[in-house]
Length: 129
Ligand code: C2G
Image (cartoon, rainbow, N blue to C red; front, side, top):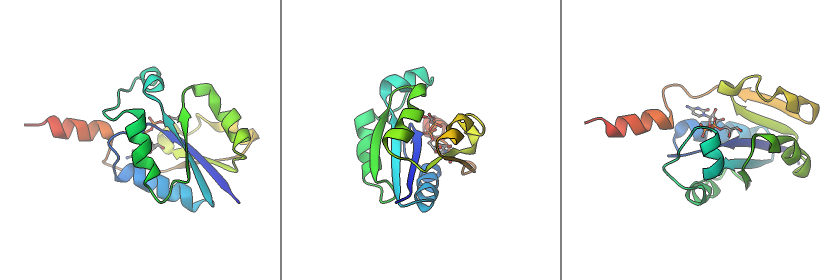
């Protein structure tokens, strides 16, 4: 069984997230998603609208996602790859190069981001009068 791993905040879920999760799931047989906790989001400089538990509940309902783990630190990825016997790490290409150190443990793939959609943009559009 080929296992795939990705991470993200996945706040205010949108088609960019779904496109990423769908393509990630198509790379293997089982997709593990590390969702950033509310505390880790602060370290990432992000404040999500939905809490970790709400974002977890939403992602658990997506057919492409097989397992959810909590992302609490930048340093947990190598341990997660080993612990979950991951074959492929995948993430959007806004992170290109940032996780190449994982190539020692698994395949690393950066997928093209979906253009013209982001949680930040969605928030701005909602605020517009
Ligand atoms: N994404 C995408 N297209 C978009 C928006 C997001 O492909 N238009 C992808 C991102 O590249 C990422 C995933 O969807 O792979 C989740 O995006 P975010 O919730 O913004 O996650 P991020 O803050 O990039 O967290 O340790 C890694 C970080 O936790 C990644």
